[in-house]
Image 1: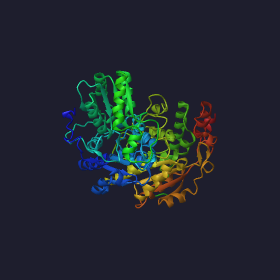
Image 2: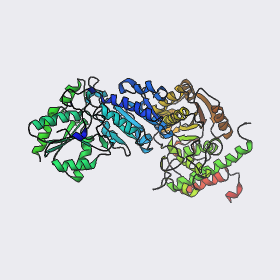
Image 3: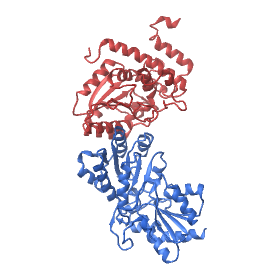
Image 4: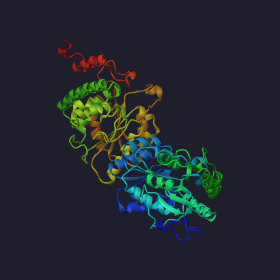
Length: 328
Length: 287
């Protein structure tokens, strides 16, 4: 059952409105910019596709174009933050934090400066652009850096909230966004706090806890509903903050269910699921299944084709839940 | 004759630079590791910066109106630390903790560990971008302070440097002055053999910078160049400072093998005597 406290949209399983999470960034950063003049946006020649152009239109004097230069994107953002600005640096996640990883490490994380790294076009759902543009390693790259906060919003509305929250958290922060339109299933009233996972679905005496991040949270809810129809009770948790991860909610859910499935559009090695396993293996080991990309690069195709091909469809989630129950 | 610095002040700074060279040799011996040639070569410029050029207050390292000195090639930090100690940021005793566990004087400088250091650096090629970002932000708010970025010539190999050079001139960051320590050495050998940089001046001019060339051991020339840069309103300025790596100690000068190692104690004794006696001109040190 959908948790009423989560205040999700009423028509959640009946064609909810759709938008890409990058739209939420575009709106959120404009709102943050309205609240605080220190907010500036930097972009490496991808203003429209990262949605940084909405900020550019509204605050042309606080928009900074870098050209195709992601290493400079990071170092200039670091300098701006060192001076006292709140910079959002936007590009595709494969390039930033991919290409400029060392610049982020030295000039943002070691420096401990509140730069917001906006990684757009993450996951295979980028679609036709193919492997080079489908970031599947970015969560791993960012979560291993000390001081870095890592957030993966589940829909456009949560992306908006996460962007505003990141603007004012005073910390180096990575925000991961997707290209493709996906259901907007949370509302303005849905609670959001960086570092606080949210229970969205809770069946009676749940047998499995699903920890999910990004737009696949919606697919997990669809899977939970299907499983409920078959008599399998689950707990679905939107685990949007990869770092610092909400240990308490994760351990409690594992204790309650005794089995876990993690779901993310990322390599299973080093991603959100790995972070959950690091916590549970120390505090409450339970059988786990990992939904995500298994040591492969993506390819061209439609987003839904690719999610199916790489094992991240609703049916895969259903199968993983049933499998993990047999391992209890 | 400079209108920006008196002859007397130049003489005074030359003596100070010699003391800073002595301090950094002592620091490197105490540390047992670190870079020698680069710091010695930049001692005159750091002296000019900390004792004449920069608006700063060693007692208030966070003073908002201070000029910002961003050291991109963090490996020459011993000369910055030595200059800061002589300027009064911390004691000479503390300077001798360089590279030791728990010291604020990290092997490569770290922003959060030492007030006044401005940024973390060491990995080459990223200081110019940080300086440009800093200068951009300051200009947005109409701040009057200047941003100085010191770079090595070796880090001109890095693509990030040129991305930043393009950004700075495109945005007409005239509040930014960059200085390249053109000492012609890098770890693997002479720069023109490892990865030729020439014509370096023309490259920066083609990137639309105002370029000045100075003798990096001539304090008067350097000060004049810094002042000229302040009068350029449409471009950032690059000061190409020709220096001798290891300047002040004959055995080290021009030898790239001294890039990344410290003097041994017996060598240091010899080197310090050479510095103190101004190469034998002062007899008493020989007795």
